[in-house]
Length: 380
Image 1 (cartoon, rainbow, N blue to C red):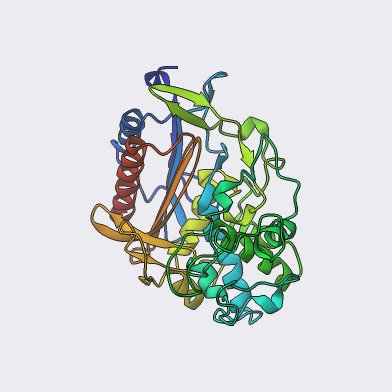
Image 2: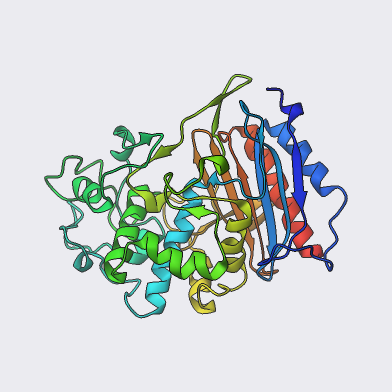
């Protein structure tokens, strides 16, 4: 399907009611900019939204959610947000810290129902903060050697069983070198398994599966009705089909489930996700107190932080957008590329969700759109 044939829809909105925002007229060039960047980036479908002071001031849905059926992207289309999910998991953990139910610098081991220790440094505890900022010493090296995904459906394996098999000595997928790397706290090493562990800990400490807890304490207060932790909970009619890139062709990819769901399984519409991301930029909004939200966005530079990052917070990361360091998180998988950026100084935020793999052209397009939407928010 030629990308020039894609349809376009957009709205100017104000959360939570998604009604016309009379105080914030839309720039006449904004829809055109998005359409131009979609073509440049080879993006079949895209949904984006921008918020300031916790209010959604603009949203757009352009292109196709499914090329074969010509189904357009709408404001309700649910995209796989991939690793942006980690910011939700981190927020759920910070909510428990705010309630006094955990201490960020305490060892996580006493809260588990299986033994957890770094095999070469068993006396050095792994803490909540280390898990949150990717310095726990838990490695994804062996994770990438085993295909834990299930194509077209959610994984049946319970989260706790997956973690026990990967992290506990004697487990089916335990590896002294592949499950663990540097000493706890010694170096940055991005870890999906570490975030899976955070979600499991949140469930054990909170007394309820973190997916249900987040529905009650994050999604419900924000009015997020088009957000799901599972494929089974995502209506097929709203699901954006993911597309990989094969030369100049877009090839559909089956959606996947994986057992470490706290690291990246959420599917959401942009108009839902901006409510969460906008709250993070607005000092936590109704979800988290300002002091704990500030901790999430306090950036450090641990050893081994890659050059493309300027800082690592708790869940959120920081990198330059148009030369300015911005808290953000990207998400990626075959057929998936998403981005969320914050401007805490102006209490504004943007999300850009697409249904294609993150090529260099797609990255450039999404960054251009994100920068323009943040500039629009600042001008409102």
